[in-house]
Length: 221
Image (cartoon, rainbow, N blue to C red):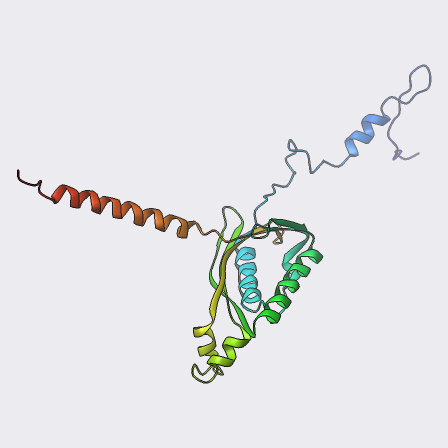
């Protein structure tokens, strides 16, 4: 007879197989999630440069067309968190996120005869996986449009942008995961550089006043 393909089995006195478990363990594939396994893949929670650049371009395009277009939901996770610190509300889910977007768009178009959102700056950080977009909303009400249509030549797009009132300025911070999907959007109206400028200006004024006081001669008696 030829050599058997089955492993040799040994039995104890009760007839229980002893080395079957050992045989099964030898054939068990390595656990990829085991950190002690050399074959375990090394994963990172941060997206790559390419994903951040691509998403930043999509966000810039969508925000510039905020009141006339629809967002590209393919770059958001289904459980995306929207932290609206302007209203103090937090919503979860891509469907609810899209509803918030459309409600803001409808409100703006009903309240203003001309309304637009313009991205002021957009930047991403590979070390943190965050995209920061600063933007401004401007608009013209119906009565203002009637009163200034002819004298301000508001039939021209450039004049509309020039004479539109600034309604709000804010910053959006988008957090991106390793799969290239946005999992959190924080909306705030606080700009760090704008908050620092008044402090620096006050410090400079105080320094100048102190210098002027030191230069003024004391009155003679």
